[in-house]
Image 1: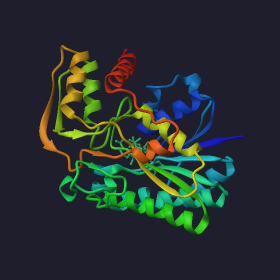
Image 2 (image 1 turned 180 degrees about the vertical axis):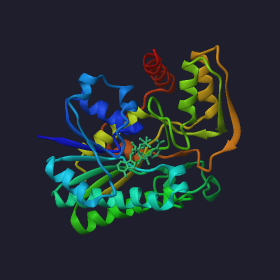
Image 3 (image 1 turned 135 degrees about the horizontal axis):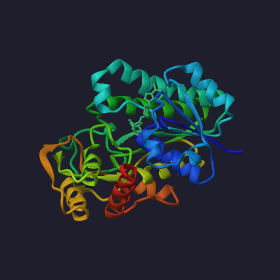
Image 4 (image 1 turned 90 degrees about the horizontal axis):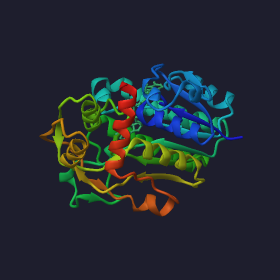
Length: 311
Ligand SMILES: NC(=O)c1ccc[n+]([C@@H]2O[C@H](COP(=O)([O-])OP(=O)(O)OC[C@H]3O[C@@H](n4cnc5c(N)ncnc54)[C@H](O)[C@@H]3O)[C@@H](O)[C@H]2O)c1
């Protein structure tokens, strides 16, 4: 009997992962330090949530993580818990404890329980700034030159995964999202496009402080890709960029304004220090399906969910 552990399940991608696992009739254990289910409440009714086992715990506690994996007879792990860029910058030690030691604890807990495979979240933050590369779209194997502690921690995670494969034959699949958007994306460096969607639903204007081209990935799609990553029996330590065609932040603003002509969404001049896009051809080669909801449809779904929730 399959049993999924989702760490960071109260977060944006985590909530969507719980939602899709529950929709697929899978048995799920949620693990998070936070007891705030507000993101999940955007997606699931109390009856649907009743099928999930909710555990509150700290990823930095090795014994606890090991116990959760072993005692719940977990067969699949989707490890998402992490502190995002601003939080790692504000509290570097805690950032390292959660993002690096926490990931070690998950790998070690999985090894102890005899699991064969883990899916976990990396990030395009493992790469450097645009001026360090010669192309706008970086190939999969472009050199990793992280510019933030968060990015350094993600590189460390991918290194940990490689060693666990080499030394213990515990295989893993990392997915590297870029700008995730959709219901529940309410914190982190690139959450402003989603905040603009929240504002539009409330008939409020919004200013997104950054502009430029980037890849936008719908949280629902990202969650489904993580579930597939947990289920695909790869042998090795794999990392995949998530794709989608790069689009401008202005295009996202225009898409919101097309649906809400009464609001004004403006974008600022700031450029985020990330390349335009990352090649996902490896993902497309290895995965039988890549989830890519078109932007307009995803914005429509997002605003509809937010509208129902506000109502
Ligand atoms: N959102 C994005 O655009 C994006 C982009 C690239 C990578 N990622 C990665 O994807 C993963 C999920 O992102 P998200 O947007 O859902 O993040 P999020 O910030 O919404 O959620 C993270 C969750 O981790 C939990 N957490 C933090 N410390 C913990 C601890 N010590 N023990 C247990 N739980 C703890 C938090 O309570 C939170 O619910 C993260 O690893 C993130 O780095 C996200």
